[in-house]
Each structure stands twice: as C-alpha cells, then as structure tokens.
Image (cartoon, rainbow, N blue to C red):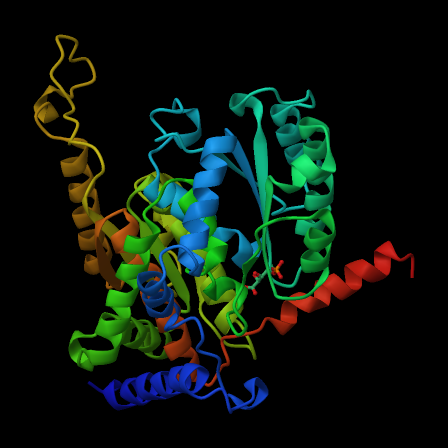
Length: 445
Ligand code: PA5
C-alpha cells in the first residue's frame, strides 16, 4: 500500500514509453528516457504473423527451423550473455530432460542443440569440434548447422567461435556455398556479423530489433529461432508473454503480480537490508531460467552503487550446500521460490521394497512430487520461524505458456524497479571496462 502510488507511476511511465516507441517514431531514440521496445514485441510479432503466415518474422523463423530440421541432426548456437542465456533457459525449461540424448524420433525429428561462443574456453570449443567431427558429412545424421547470434556483431567470444566453427562447417560440407546454407545469423541490420554473413552468402538473416537490449531480447528472434529449432511452440510462448502484458497493463497494483513482486523486493531491500535476491527454483529444469534472471537483474540494475545481487539456487539440491548460510547466515536475503504446479511426467512413487534397510517403506506411497512439496513447505516454515522473508512464484508448469509469462514478468519488473530506484536498466557501461583493458593487453600496449 505504501508503495502503490510509486509503483503505479512507474507502470504508467513504462506504458507511455512503449507508446512512444511504437506509436510515434518522431521521437529520436536518444531522447527517449527509457527504451521499452521489448515490451510490446510479443503482441507485435503475433499480429504480424496472423496477418501473414509466411512473410512475417515468425513465419520465416518457423520455415527456417523446418529447413534445419529436415537438413541436419545438430545445431550449434553461438552467442553470449543476452544472446545466449534465453535460448538455454528455453531449452532446459521446455525440452525434455536429456533432450540431446534422445533418439531423433523422440526429439520430434528436431536437431540436438549445443551452445558455444559463450566463453573463451579452449577445451569446451575443441570438445564440441571433435564431437561434430571433421569428416565430410554424408547424411542428415552427421550434418550440422550454425545459428550465430550477436546483436553488435562485435563480441569477441562469439566472433572467434563463429570463425572457428564456420571453418569446420566448410570442411564438413565440402564448400563455402554449401556451408552458407547451414548458417543462420541473428544480428543487427548492420555491423561486422551482418557484413560477414552477407559475404558468406547466408540466405536468411534475422534481426535483433533496434532498441531491444540483449538481456531483453529472449522473445525476439534471439530466443525464438533456437526455440523453434528445438521444436518449441513459439506462438504459445509469445501468447504467454502477451497475457502478462495485458495483466500488467490492467490489473490493480494489489493484484498485479509484476508490481507486487517489485514492491516486495524493493521494500525488503530498503527496510530489511535484503540486498541479495535469491531465486530458489524447485526444479532442475528451471536452473537456466534462474541464470537468465541473474543476468537480467545484475546487468540492468547493478549500477551507480545500487541494485540487489541476484543468486539462483536449485532446490532441493542446494539445500545441501547453501541452506546452512541461508538459515543462519547474514539477514541480507529475500528468497523467492519458483514452484511448479504440474510436472512434465506422471508422479513417480518412492516404491515399496523387501529391502528396507534404507527405512523408506514408510514413504513408499509418497511420490517425488509430494516429497518436493513437503521440502518447499518445510523450508518456508523454517525460514519463517527465524524471521527470514520468502515469497512464492507459482508456475502452472515448466512450459512455453508459463515461461512466456514469467520471462515477460521479470523483464517488466526489472524496468519498473529501475524506475523506482532511478536507474536506467538498459545499457551496461561497466561491461565495457574489462573489454577495453583486455584489448589493450592483446594489442601489447
Ligand atoms: O544484455 C546484453 O546486452 C549483453 O549481455 C549482450 O547480450 C552480450 O554482451 C552479447 O552481445 P552481442 O549480442 O552484441 O554479441
């Protein structure tokens, strides 16, 4: 209640910015106080698709994914930061566990997905290149493709990996021309990667829209193309995000999940010093969703000596590594649990055994889902007893609809919180510092 007027003001400002972005192109980008282009992107992409199923961006993404599905067994997705975390979160969140190990039929005919260009790691790059093999590909089963994602086209990690993996792809396909058909860039409308992919002769390119920063780009081609290649339902993903937009626009502050989340996090930080924001995901499939949010929060609001520190924990796993500190360490944390209402597979019972040395027969009829619910409840109760604040975010399931909502919710929340504390969430000037220092070292200065 105390914060409602400020939250309401932040919401209105954000909606006005969004309108400026799309309704009036008269306002030059540099004069817009904050850049809200990511906000209405789900609705815009869906409307364009409805009007034109083949020529729209979504239509082209779906066609490209179908082409890759028919041509290759593996796709290497190159990208880092906002050009990587979203695709990974979508894969772990929505694909079956052990997706890459499944047979092609069990993957719905979709290619296996590998991520590179997200580090400077000799062994990881070499490991994947060895796995892909250097022999000329003779069938779909040993053919592979590259999706290279870089908004600026200048990011060292991704650019170096693209050079190396494209050289390997040329060898595997036997010619530059054939390799070009298996490279799909997602990049700005100009820049080094744009020029390079034009020179290579790539047939299809996808844009990262102007005004959509890397970590806000998951629901653009940056996340949608890899998602479509994995066989995910990108229409439902966007519809989930659009539903969250509608909720954000229309729900009263007291019922508005975005405003409630921001209000709670902000108050806990200001009044209780909870400047570590722990996102406790209670499912392994959500770990990368948490890491995606770590980046979003850290890079957006960690400026001018402000911004909460994000930390993802995967429970119950991390109850065995972090819970001691979380239960009895410094009182500087807010725990937000992300809990699934429904699991992908039917509930697996512990099961009865004639070997009861493990003393588990008393739990024989309980399922893993029930054990998990008890762990969530028990942990919340233990934290509560000690006056440690928790909040629950309930996800109907780890699927496209729910995650579409959640990604959008957290992106909007980050911008609203930025407005509340007076931080521009876009841009990451601090990241440039290490790059400049590293370039100097490489240039021998
Ligand atoms: O959020 C951001 O803007 C960054 O994390 C970028 O996504 C990251 O640095 C990669 O940049 P690019 O897509 O230009 O290669």
